[in-house]
Amino acid sequence: MKTPFWHQNPAALIAVLLITACGDARGPATSADNAAAGRAPLQFQVFGDPAELQAYRELIAGYEARHENHKVALIPVGKQKDHMAKLTAAFAAKRPPDVFVINYRRYGQFAA
Image (tube, rainbow, N blue to C red; front, side):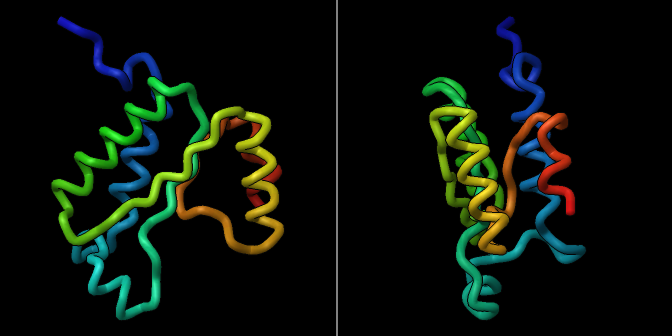
C-alpha cells in the first residue's frame, strides 16, 4: 500500500485542515456568498517542487469537488526564498493570502 502524501508532508494535511476550516458554522462560503461580499476565491500560497505543487492542486480539486460553490486560487511559488519575500510583501501591503504554508520557525515574523 502506498504511503499517503500527507504522511510524507504533514504541511499538506495542515493546509487541507486550514482550507476546510475557512467555512463558518453554516459550512464553507459559496461563490454567491463571496460575490455578495465582494470577495475573490480563497487564496492559497505555497512553495514546492513540481510534485508537491501537483499534490496541492489535487487537494484543492478534492476540496472544490466537495464544496462545489467555493473556489481556491493556488498561488504556487517555486523557491522558499521567493515564497517568504512574496509573503512579506503581501503582509506589508496588508493583503496576505488567506492560507499559506510555512515552517513554524518562520511564523513569528507574520504573527503580529
